[in-house]
Structure formats: C-alpha cells, structure tokens
Length: 112
Image 1: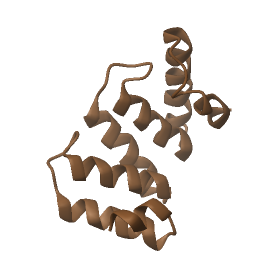
Image 2 (image 1 turned 90 degrees about the horizontal axis):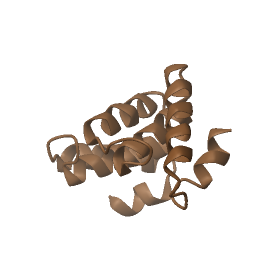
Image 3 (image 1 turned 90 degrees about the vertical axis):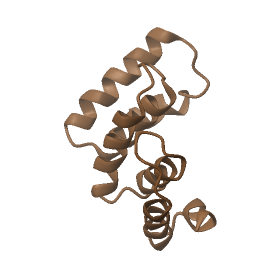
Image 4 (image 1 turned 45 degrees about the horizontal axis):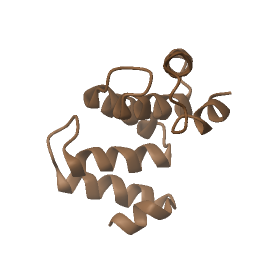
C-alpha cells in the first residue's frame, strides 16, 4: 500500500492526502516496515504531509539503513554530503555511498 501511495507523493499537492500518507508511513514505520521508514524520511526531508525536519529524516533513513535498505543508505549519504540534519561529513557520505554501491545501488556508485 505504501509504495502505491508513494508513487503519487511528488505529484500530490493535496495537503490532506499527504497528511494521510504521512500518518500511514508513521504507523507502518513503527511496526518495523523498512520501506515505510525510508518513505517517512523522505516526507520529513521534503516537508510533505509534515513540517520539514531534516533531523527526523536522518533518524528514519538510519533506521531503514540499519536494516539494509539500499536506497536508505543512499539517502543517508546525501544528508551527510549536504549537512542536512547532521554535521556535514564527506567521509560518512562516501561510506554510505560505498555500502550502497556494494549492495548494487547504481546512483550510489555514481556518487563515489
């Protein structure tokens, strides 16, 4: 369900729908759903359905990355690269990208 809802996340400007998606992701993330944790990070990162909060985005990405979700590692690397929600740390960004690349995330390879 989350994946289908998320497909419309960038195209969706309806605040109530985004709020509903946020609450659904929040619930599923607490249940340990790794995809929901990553999506929740993106919602916090871009301020969709919730006030933008880079620190919360990092926490969500870290939870998903700790469970081996490749895209979450890539997203976490971006946060370190830009210094969004964490202190800018190029070494940590490269570390995230290398792990993502090792796990075969194409964009992670490009960033290394």
